[in-house]
Image 1 (cartoon, each protein chain N blue to C red):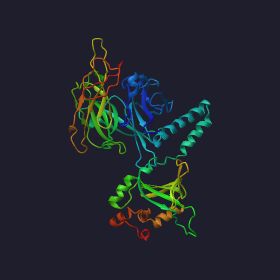
Image 2: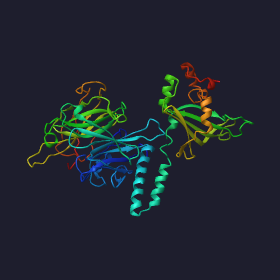
Image 3: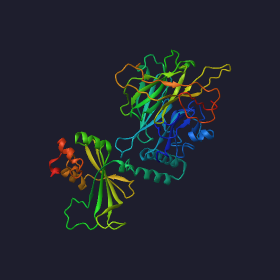
Image 4: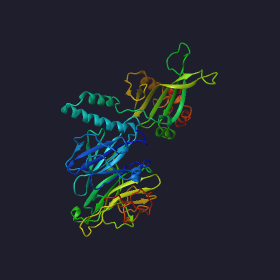
Length: 256
Length: 244
């Protein structure tokens, strides 16, 4: 394996088998996949939306640790697990997002993020303060970024709200960050209200930012970040070609 | 979801909202989506693993699962057992592939710490490298922090080749050793000729007592590293015995 030919590891769950963490791997650039353990790698009472990250050991001669963050159940908790061998998994902590974001009733789909620029670890998460919680299909869900140290299993700063400039900011979730080295991208589901047929559409959108910074420390959770994310409007027609994203472009995966 | 922490690689996109999933690479998007050949699944994350440690963990877990499975299903149990044993032989230690990009401290030619009856007719080169974070810390404090890792690369010396008419130059690797500081304790490791298998030297090996008695700074032979010796003197961390 090398930077140009990595082994891909996929942490996921199946909707008919939500109590198992599934791990699959691919050695051919994410085309074909095999299960690490066909029986399921880890069983928990409830385990959805697993996000995985590998934290290398500071000693280059020693192996690192895999950390998982999952949505354990409907509510505002997120749960963390670690594994040194992908065979044994240990729960390390459970965080109630409501304790960090006052009024939060729902926290969905946390996603690890290791910023190569500052070397810090974070997770993105969709947070709703709708009193009806997830039972409401129209509950507003907004992105938050939580500085979090996986090794100490504790937040390393207060969550910050991510202002998606230009979006309706009604119901956004399943955030996923990406950086090409010069720009940050945040992909997410931008769920649209039910149309005349009653179907909810779930286009994938992304926002970009040339620079953003989270202040870590004893700051109020409302501490603003220094740069907003530019959100672009959906295309009317789904694109069939990859286009280099920029602040005015938008990409939609066909068939969603 | 797309791959996490893959900033320098082509992103892999996935339908994060519903299964069955579809994965797209940047290349395949140009030609149209390529379906992900995997059972239906829901929201998850794909990460790229590029180092020997993490990929070994994956393959070891696969072998362990096959071992358990084959024990019940009558599949080639021995093959899975051998695969697992081969992976466990690494014992979590892998030679850093980029150690030659670390900080180069010094080379020695024909050095030995034992009494020498006659000059070695075929001396060897010893090249010493140290991990950059440890080097940076040493410049500041004159001490080695935890996780410090030294690599000693032993190479054969040649004298006849090309246009050379005198002296020696380096050729193939004869052996590699490592010295690692963890929790204040130093451990020596020896790599095989392939450079991939590694085992800690027993504590009874002479290297432990020799370094403890003669290391100029904290078990290490800083007295042989010309750029670090002045630092140790300035910081006052030079060990009396080693400084002799």
